[in-house]
Image 1 (cartoon, helix red, strand yellow):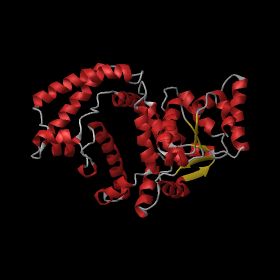
Image 2 (cartoon, rainbow, N blue to C red):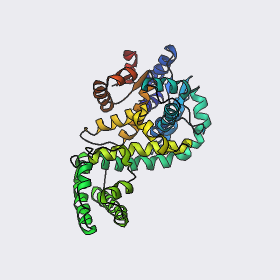
Image 3 (cartoon, rainbow, N blue to C red):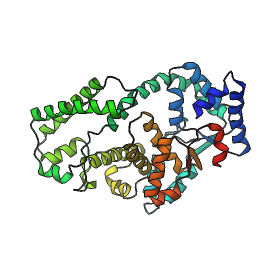
Image 4 (cartoon, rainbow, N blue to C red):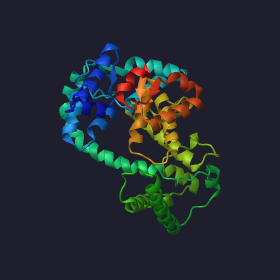
Length: 361
């Protein structure tokens, strides 16, 4: 929506210009503050067209008041979901007995910085434009990541118990399986991956070759096969259940790694606090993982899903948040399944046209 607004704001068409300017007036008249996170900046900068990028930044300067998440590192850029998660972890560890709603209220008090759009853009414009090529490349990489992640080659039946009872295949057998999976992954990405994806066969082959080469280290371990596999992929055995599937274990592993990174960031020994954090999973990480589960049911993956799930977590800390249809559907399913979240999440809506924003208030 921000991209469309900026396009219309500088359009040669008078009606389009008036429509975009009326949105800024609507924000002012209704005391609405535009939230700008690092994820918004990424999306605004990651296109090739330099003029459109400049128009997008210039458009933001016209908002008299904007709000952005503080950066935990105090680097002055708008914060990201990592900064939200860092504040949540600190809050939980300070008072483990807090409910999820209490954590959110506590974090909200110290999360946001207020300023003018002009102040925000002018103080960062040079830095952001310098980073633009990196963000454009990142966007291309995310097409590949989203396509691989959305493929249905994950094992949904094999459980941890099955792994414990199984035997480690020979390297030759493992290599043969990886070759077969490469063909399957390529076919999956063609059907379920981001439609902008190219070179499916090469990407799938490279990914499975890398997986096989990385996994050879397992054969050097003197531990039993199950422990060797879990240790190699840095999966914490203490938080696993025997009936967990491989797919569930891998998702838990992602959560685990994020918590480890945050603990390292703030100088906390993860091993000493991991049980507290898993018993009271930080709200943004919980919502992000739930959004990710829901997006798996979509027909095709999309690179934008990566940023969308990060932005979606800000629904816990804002009064209103606009999302696309896919994310809105995910929110509706999540709120039906989790009554606590239905009361915590702010108003989530989708706009077919930005001029309809007055209808959601």
